[in-house]
Length: 189
Image (cartoon, rainbow, N blue to C red; front, side):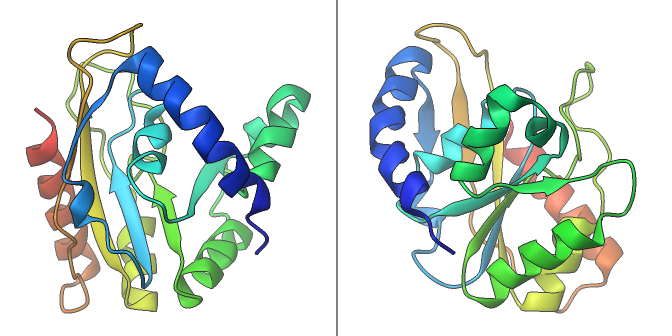
């Protein structure tokens, strides 16, 4: 995959993002520098993925709802940074296949196991099984993260905690999904 625009835009947009939102990030060292990984966390705001993108030099291929690709204003940007469009109205095998290819080639996928932004008062929504299924199929580690606080200008409480990688290869899908849920829940302060 050609990641020119991703690598070009990250050093330009990262300082702007950091200045504006003032995120406090813990555990950057827990993101492996190489090998297939899935970075998974809670989803509360449209900017959540930026916290991980600024935490590592690795290219993170994010899975994003296809509606971003239907909108002319966001389509170009999401294509430039190599996001994978996901049709959430069905089991999107095409999106899953593209994500598996990234992992099989030693890349990094970013995903929100809740499947959508959590606009409820609940800490987390129920997790879909795609994250752990892909990890098991590709022998990928899952790097959990939790986001808490507010997305405001110069936020005083926006905090991201990145946990240690999880190996789910010896767990059932159900056990792996519960472990991931528990890990992310514990990282949300």
